Image (cartoon, rainbow, N blue to C red; front, side, top):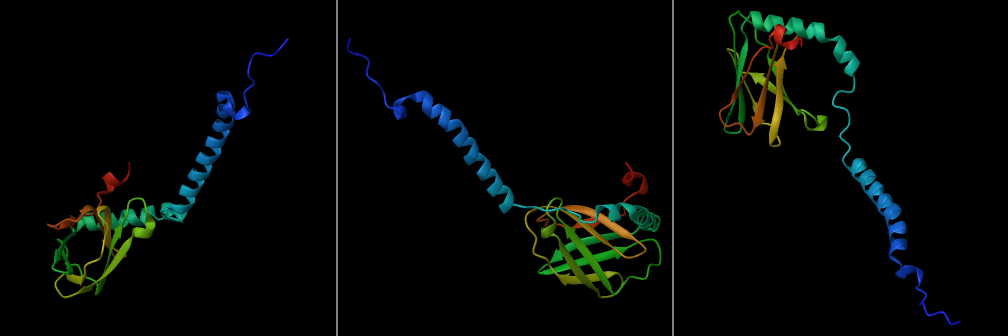
Length: 171
């Protein structure tokens, strides 16, 4: 009896490609995810998170001092210069150098710290930093006080840094 059915080759059968395709697709997909994760490593925002957690009481005392003294910092751009004007109810002795930190909310290698020089009566100048477009947490302070704020860069009008109210900081 002759065989009337034609025998197909293995690569012409669709179910074979389904059986081979699913594992092959999963291998390619996994390798691409591994490649993306290695190329876009974002790291830890704060390396010493435990130590930072222990410093919270010191930070709260700095916030309380700034709040009681009604300290504020007005930050704006004047041309290519960053201008910071400090004000408060207390007779504060302003430091000769003031650091103003622009911290990215998620990527720590984008953080920028600007050192400002005191030009008298609470006014500070420095060259304007180059920041990427987006939201930034801004912090300045000394050992006695600390001011914070958020800005969405680029901000043409400037912004105000205020003390964190101690009741608002504890959640």
